[in-house]
Image 1: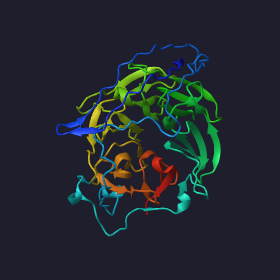
Image 2: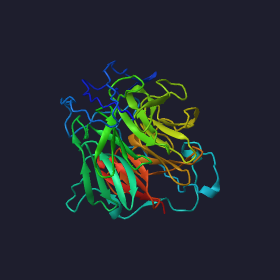
Image 3: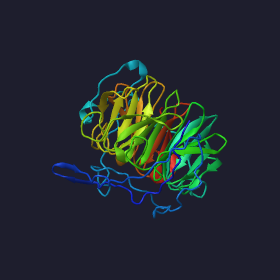
Image 4: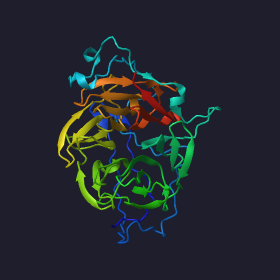
Length: 395
């Protein structure tokens, strides 16, 4: 095994301006920067000479990764029409276009949110143990692993919100984070975490030990520029949404580059700031494309299959989608970050229903991000703007 353990601090972060014009979204191209890469032959070898400089961002704010074309948050929240039924697995794949005239209705009540005990984070005083939870993965036994991008750490909590362990701190050294975005677990039960501002992937074991990291900032095959969503397959290969390089990169469990899926562009199979990724039971790769406001689907080998979703505020439409999850029946859940809700799609990609509106009450969201389906079938949502985790239960 060989991991690239060089740690580099960015001089400045490429960004995008959320502006639009009559001709469509206008995008600023990322700055072209190059950093050297040192590959060490010792597996998971720690770099004792990491740079100690840190970006000027404070703990109260994180680097923006909102792509162009997003809805202006100063405008009033759009009226959302909630369809009353999520198709059951036995009802088949019924194509349902987005738009108010094509909803699925019947006499069943809409899915509801569970009791307040299914909200994790705030204590009796209203203060939260989270600052901005961005990624979540269930660990079994009623335990959850959650990364908080403002606290720059990995938290292990119970499904009742009790803190068990806090791992990591802010920085660019070994075992330190700069705005971690997402987390998954590998087949050998390691935590795999995207370390956004350090442009690397970190590996931790279940005992809370940092095993190392790979990646440096750049656009070469083995480099990353703002990694966000992350997933592992059954062989331990690591799939990374390389946000500012506009692609998905695949690495071995040891951090060796395998292949790239997609590239920057407007064609199907190309990306504009991919953010979330999940592998379905059938082996398909589903990627939320935040700049194109859709979900793109590929074979595990990287061949483009199809896409669903489009920009807008109507049910079934997306605005800067982020997290994505698939349940045991194949239903697809997408964090509709710009519209502050969760969109649900049938296994075929047709629209099924949505959860939530914008706000801070139970069942409302403010910029939802990471998603995870729990053992009991509930959906855990990183309600990042409200500093909490919400558990959605369908009635």
